[in-house]
Amino acid sequence: MKDKVILVLVDGMRPDGLLQCSHPFVERMKKLAAYSLTAQTVMPSVTLPCHMSLFHSVDPERHGITTNTYIPQVRPIEGLFDRLDAEGKKCGFFYTWEELRDLSRPDHLHTAVCMNQHKRQGTDNLITDAAIKYINDEDPDFLFLYLGETDELGGHDTGWMSETYLKVVNNAIGCTEKLYDSISKDYTLILTADHGGHGRGHGSDDPQDMTIPIFIIGPRFEKGKEYPGGSIKDIAPTVTKLLEVRPAKEWEGKPMI
Image (cartoon, rainbow, N blue to C red):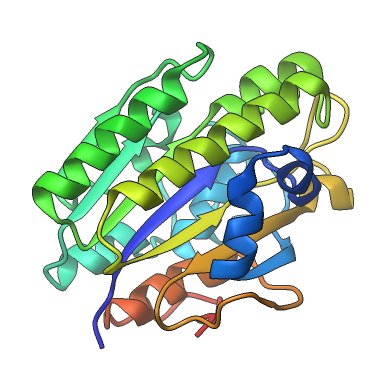
Protein backbone atom coordinates (compact mmCIF):
# COMPACT_ATOMS: atom_id res chain seq x y z
CA MET A 1 0.00 0.00 0.00
CA LYS A 2 1.46 3.34 -1.07
CA ASP A 3 0.70 6.32 1.14
CA LYS A 4 1.20 10.05 0.85
CA VAL A 5 2.78 11.91 3.74
CA ILE A 6 2.66 15.36 5.31
CA LEU A 7 5.40 16.11 7.86
CA VAL A 8 4.79 19.09 10.15
CA LEU A 9 7.62 20.24 12.40
CA VAL A 10 7.08 22.80 15.17
CA ASP A 11 10.44 24.30 16.06
CA GLY A 12 11.29 24.00 19.75
CA MET A 13 8.08 22.26 20.82
CA ARG A 14 8.54 20.28 24.03
CA PRO A 15 6.14 17.39 24.71
CA ASP A 16 4.95 19.00 27.95
CA GLY A 17 4.47 22.26 26.08
CA LEU A 18 2.27 20.40 23.61
CA LEU A 19 0.25 18.84 26.43
CA GLN A 20 -0.13 22.11 28.34
CA CYS A 21 -0.95 24.43 25.44
CA SER A 22 -4.72 23.89 25.98
CA HIS A 23 -5.59 23.29 22.34
CA PRO A 24 -8.39 20.71 21.95
CA PHE A 25 -6.69 19.13 18.94
CA VAL A 26 -4.05 17.67 21.29
CA GLU A 27 -6.60 15.31 22.87
CA ARG A 28 -8.02 14.56 19.44
CA MET A 29 -4.54 13.65 18.18
CA LYS A 30 -4.01 11.33 21.14
CA LYS A 31 -7.10 9.41 20.03
CA LEU A 32 -6.26 9.44 16.30
CA ALA A 33 -2.49 8.89 16.37
CA ALA A 34 0.20 6.47 17.34
CA TYR A 35 2.51 8.69 19.32
CA SER A 36 5.53 9.09 21.57
CA LEU A 37 6.11 11.81 24.13
CA THR A 38 9.62 10.54 24.92
CA ALA A 39 11.35 10.50 21.53
CA GLN A 40 14.88 11.90 21.39
CA THR A 41 16.59 14.38 19.11
CA VAL A 42 20.36 14.59 18.48
CA MET A 43 23.27 16.51 19.97
CA PRO A 44 23.80 19.36 19.59
CA SER A 45 20.08 20.02 20.04
CA VAL A 46 20.20 22.99 17.66
CA THR A 47 17.80 23.69 14.81
CA LEU A 48 19.86 23.08 11.65
CA PRO A 49 21.82 20.06 12.96
CA CYS A 50 18.55 18.49 14.15
CA HIS A 51 16.86 19.07 10.80
CA MET A 52 19.83 17.62 8.95
CA SER A 53 19.63 14.53 11.17
CA LEU A 54 15.90 14.24 10.57
CA PHE A 55 16.33 14.39 6.78
CA HIS A 56 19.55 12.32 6.62
CA SER A 57 18.89 9.86 9.49
CA VAL A 58 22.37 10.12 11.01
CA ASP A 59 23.94 12.01 13.90
CA PRO A 60 25.53 15.45 13.35
CA GLU A 61 29.01 13.98 13.68
CA ARG A 62 28.26 12.00 10.51
CA HIS A 63 26.59 14.69 8.36
CA GLY A 64 28.94 17.37 9.69
CA ILE A 65 26.46 20.16 10.50
CA THR A 66 26.93 21.13 14.15
CA THR A 67 25.77 24.78 14.11
CA ASN A 68 23.07 26.80 12.36
CA THR A 69 25.47 27.49 9.48
CA TYR A 70 25.33 25.00 6.62
CA ILE A 71 28.56 23.59 5.20
CA PRO A 72 28.75 21.05 2.35
CA GLN A 73 29.03 17.48 3.52
CA VAL A 74 32.51 16.01 3.22
CA ARG A 75 31.07 12.50 2.88
CA PRO A 76 27.67 13.21 1.32
CA ILE A 77 24.60 11.26 2.39
CA GLU A 78 21.42 11.30 0.36
CA GLY A 79 18.65 13.09 2.21
CA LEU A 80 14.94 12.38 2.29
CA PHE A 81 14.08 14.81 -0.52
CA ASP A 82 16.88 13.31 -2.63
CA ARG A 83 15.63 9.75 -2.18
CA LEU A 84 12.02 10.65 -2.92
CA ASP A 85 12.87 12.63 -6.02
CA ALA A 86 15.09 9.81 -7.32
CA GLU A 87 12.03 7.55 -7.37
CA GLY A 88 9.70 10.05 -8.99
CA LYS A 89 7.86 11.42 -5.97
CA LYS A 90 6.44 14.95 -6.06
CA CYS A 91 7.70 16.91 -3.04
CA GLY A 92 6.83 20.28 -1.53
CA PHE A 93 8.79 22.27 1.04
CA PHE A 94 7.13 25.14 2.94
CA TYR A 95 9.22 26.91 5.57
CA THR A 96 9.86 30.20 7.37
CA TRP A 97 13.57 30.01 8.19
CA GLU A 98 15.84 30.38 5.18
CA GLU A 99 18.74 28.43 6.70
CA LEU A 100 16.73 25.24 6.05
CA ARG A 101 17.02 25.63 2.27
CA ASP A 102 19.93 23.17 2.06
CA LEU A 103 17.82 20.26 3.35
CA SER A 104 17.23 19.64 -0.34
CA ARG A 105 19.79 19.64 -3.12
CA PRO A 106 18.93 21.65 -6.27
CA ASP A 107 16.28 20.26 -8.64
CA HIS A 108 14.88 17.71 -6.18
CA LEU A 109 11.70 19.61 -5.30
CA HIS A 110 8.48 20.24 -7.20
CA THR A 111 7.76 23.37 -5.15
CA ALA A 112 9.54 25.28 -2.39
CA VAL A 113 8.07 28.29 -0.60
CA CYS A 114 10.06 30.26 1.98
CA MET A 115 8.50 33.03 4.06
CA ASN A 116 11.61 34.12 5.93
CA GLN A 117 9.65 35.98 8.59
CA HIS A 118 9.60 33.56 11.52
CA LYS A 119 10.24 36.44 13.92
CA ARG A 120 6.91 38.01 12.94
CA GLN A 121 3.68 36.84 14.52
CA GLY A 122 1.30 35.32 12.04
CA THR A 123 3.86 33.72 9.74
CA ASP A 124 2.99 30.18 10.86
CA ASN A 125 -0.61 30.81 9.79
CA LEU A 126 0.44 32.22 6.42
CA ILE A 127 2.78 29.34 5.55
CA THR A 128 0.15 26.81 6.66
CA ASP A 129 -2.46 28.37 4.37
CA ALA A 130 0.02 28.29 1.49
CA ALA A 131 0.79 24.62 2.15
CA ILE A 132 -2.89 23.67 2.30
CA LYS A 133 -3.57 25.35 -1.04
CA TYR A 134 -0.61 23.58 -2.64
CA ILE A 135 -1.62 20.18 -1.26
CA ASN A 136 -5.17 20.52 -2.54
CA ASP A 137 -4.11 21.94 -5.92
CA GLU A 138 -1.10 19.75 -6.67
CA ASP A 139 -1.61 16.51 -4.68
CA PRO A 140 2.07 15.99 -3.75
CA ASP A 141 3.40 12.67 -2.51
CA PHE A 142 5.30 14.35 0.34
CA LEU A 143 5.23 17.79 1.89
CA PHE A 144 7.32 19.23 4.71
CA LEU A 145 5.81 22.14 6.64
CA TYR A 146 8.03 24.00 9.11
CA LEU A 147 6.48 26.24 11.77
CA GLY A 148 9.08 28.46 13.44
CA GLU A 149 7.32 30.93 15.72
CA THR A 150 7.38 28.61 18.75
CA ASP A 151 11.17 28.69 18.96
CA GLU A 152 11.75 32.37 18.24
CA LEU A 153 8.72 34.24 19.60
CA GLY A 154 8.04 31.75 22.38
CA GLY A 155 11.21 30.08 23.63
CA HIS A 156 14.01 32.53 22.91
CA ASP A 157 12.03 35.72 23.49
CA THR A 158 10.07 34.80 26.63
CA GLY A 159 11.35 31.40 27.79
CA TRP A 160 10.30 27.81 27.30
CA MET A 161 7.02 27.03 29.10
CA SER A 162 6.23 30.72 29.59
CA GLU A 163 2.68 31.93 28.97
CA THR A 164 3.71 33.35 25.61
CA TYR A 165 5.48 30.13 24.63
CA LEU A 166 2.36 28.07 25.37
CA LYS A 167 0.23 30.51 23.35
CA VAL A 168 2.51 30.13 20.34
CA VAL A 169 2.49 26.33 20.70
CA ASN A 170 -1.31 26.56 20.85
CA ASN A 171 -1.31 28.46 17.57
CA ALA A 172 1.00 25.91 15.92
CA ILE A 173 -1.33 23.09 16.97
CA GLY A 174 -4.21 25.12 15.55
CA CYS A 175 -2.31 25.34 12.25
CA THR A 176 -1.83 21.57 12.33
CA GLU A 177 -5.53 20.99 12.97
CA LYS A 178 -6.49 23.30 10.12
CA LEU A 179 -4.18 21.44 7.77
CA TYR A 180 -5.44 18.02 8.87
CA ASP A 181 -9.07 19.02 8.45
CA SER A 182 -8.44 20.67 5.06
CA ILE A 183 -6.75 17.87 3.15
CA SER A 184 -7.55 14.37 1.94
CA LYS A 185 -7.37 11.59 4.52
CA ASP A 186 -5.28 9.68 1.97
CA TYR A 187 -2.37 11.46 3.64
CA THR A 188 -0.53 10.21 6.70
CA LEU A 189 0.22 13.17 8.97
CA ILE A 190 3.38 13.24 11.08
CA LEU A 191 3.80 15.96 13.72
CA THR A 192 7.11 16.40 15.50
CA ALA A 193 9.71 18.90 16.73
CA ASP A 194 13.42 19.36 16.16
CA HIS A 195 14.34 19.96 19.83
CA GLY A 196 12.95 21.32 23.09
CA GLY A 197 14.48 23.98 25.28
CA HIS A 198 14.78 25.39 28.79
CA GLY A 199 15.14 28.92 30.08
CA ARG A 200 15.64 30.92 26.89
CA GLY A 201 17.89 28.51 25.07
CA HIS A 202 18.63 24.98 23.90
CA GLY A 203 21.52 22.98 22.50
CA SER A 204 22.52 20.90 25.53
CA ASP A 205 21.91 17.26 26.43
CA ASP A 206 19.41 18.32 29.11
CA PRO A 207 16.27 16.16 28.74
CA GLN A 208 14.22 19.35 28.32
CA ASP A 209 16.27 20.09 25.18
CA MET A 210 16.51 16.52 23.91
CA THR A 211 12.97 15.16 24.28
CA ILE A 212 10.52 15.65 21.41
CA PRO A 213 7.02 14.44 20.53
CA ILE A 214 6.18 12.33 17.47
CA PHE A 215 2.52 11.89 16.46
CA ILE A 216 1.55 9.85 13.39
CA ILE A 217 -2.03 9.82 12.12
CA GLY A 218 -2.67 7.43 9.25
CA PRO A 219 -4.35 4.18 8.24
CA ARG A 220 -1.27 2.08 8.93
CA PHE A 221 -0.86 3.26 12.52
CA GLU A 222 -2.83 2.13 15.55
CA LYS A 223 -5.06 4.87 16.88
CA GLY A 224 -4.48 5.96 20.45
CA LYS A 225 -1.32 3.91 20.93
CA GLU A 226 1.43 5.53 22.97
CA TYR A 227 4.82 3.94 22.46
CA PRO A 228 8.06 4.57 24.35
CA GLY A 229 11.11 6.25 22.92
CA GLY A 230 11.83 6.75 19.27
CA SER A 231 14.30 9.05 17.55
CA ILE A 232 14.24 11.98 15.18
CA LYS A 233 16.40 9.75 12.95
CA ASP A 234 13.46 7.32 12.58
CA ILE A 235 11.27 9.81 10.71
CA ALA A 236 12.94 9.71 7.27
CA PRO A 237 12.94 5.87 7.16
CA THR A 238 9.27 5.93 8.17
CA VAL A 239 8.41 8.29 5.30
CA THR A 240 10.28 6.20 2.73
CA LYS A 241 8.63 3.03 4.06
CA LEU A 242 5.19 4.57 3.65
CA LEU A 243 6.01 5.79 0.14
CA GLU A 244 7.68 2.49 -0.85
CA VAL A 245 11.00 4.18 -1.55
CA ARG A 246 14.37 2.66 -0.73
CA PRO A 247 16.16 4.50 2.11
CA ALA A 248 19.76 5.60 1.71
CA LYS A 249 22.15 2.87 2.78
CA GLU A 250 23.84 5.15 5.33
CA TRP A 251 20.68 5.94 7.25
CA GLU A 252 20.74 4.79 10.86
CA GLY A 253 17.11 5.21 11.92
CA LYS A 254 14.42 2.54 11.74
CA PRO A 255 10.88 2.82 10.33
CA MET A 256 8.20 3.26 12.96
CA ILE A 257 5.91 0.87 11.12
